[in-house]
Amino acid sequence: MIDPTWDNKKIETHLRRLDHWSGDIAIEPLVGGLCNKSFVVTDAGKKFVARIGTDILVHGITRTSVQASMRAGSEIGVTPLLRYSEPGLAVVDFLEGGCVRPEDIEGQDANLQMIVDCLKRTHDGSDKVRGPMTYFWPFQVVRHYAAVGREKGSRLRSELARLVDIANTLEHAIEPYTPVFTHNDVVPQNLMFDGEQRIWLIDWDYGGYGHPMFDLVAVGANADASEATEQRLFELYYGALNDGLRRQLTAFKLILNLREYLWGMVQEVTSDLDQSAVAASMAELYPDQEQGYEGYTNMNRERFETNWERYRSEF
View 1 (cartoon, rainbow, N blue to C red):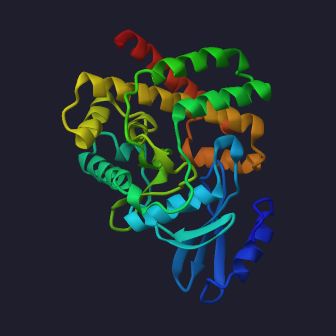
View 2 (cartoon, helix red, strand yellow):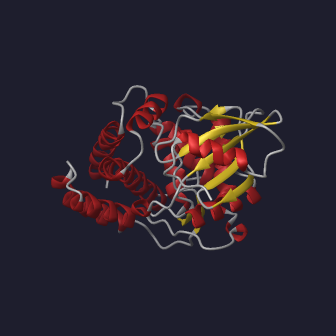
């Protein structure tokens, strides 16, 4: 069984010993993850991604739930096929097209439709889930992250009481709903093109049961999309929007901004990943931001504060 604390050399040795492969394999590190290690494995001319991870309880991540989400997503047809798994390791098909970029979302109606179709298939696929799975409620996540920040002496601890009060206020805007299978981390780098320009979801660390609006608002919010593009995205999913839907979507956008903001804070005070690898991933994903977790925190802090002022003025 793999040990996620191993260095890359030990991990590569373990990967080579798996009976899964047809022969000799080539292995290269894959840059881009902010929470796990991944490698591209080439076996007989076909590429796979070997994703290494462990339970990260501070984020509510358990491998049992992650792999259950990956299996369900594979069966539904919204994520690359899961080819092999063991505790701490999952091997999936590699997608050649690269991740979605903000410019692939802004005003791109065909891409927005593909993303909405992918999310709808996910949310309609709850019957494909087998085994234990996480329940993801972002308001609870924010309260938990704030507690971690206080316990660990975060640089943001003086702000946390206010942020929890805001989360509690936003939670009251959400109406009763039926939980469905959700991804819960729809940042642009987790939306991937394949070689035929279809769009797929990857990285199911936060997969579980949750609210479909959280996935939907994440598409635009994490790409800093314009109001017009967000409006189009929501209309493609729901059709015409009434005031109740609009207020809930806005509340979910804010709690998403706040969750990302405090996720970065928690990584600052708890992560033991190699900081050079984190900096390289930040440079790849967010080249205009400060490298490291503080850059991620500050980027989402700005998003949250801007959108909170808009919410206060409107609602």
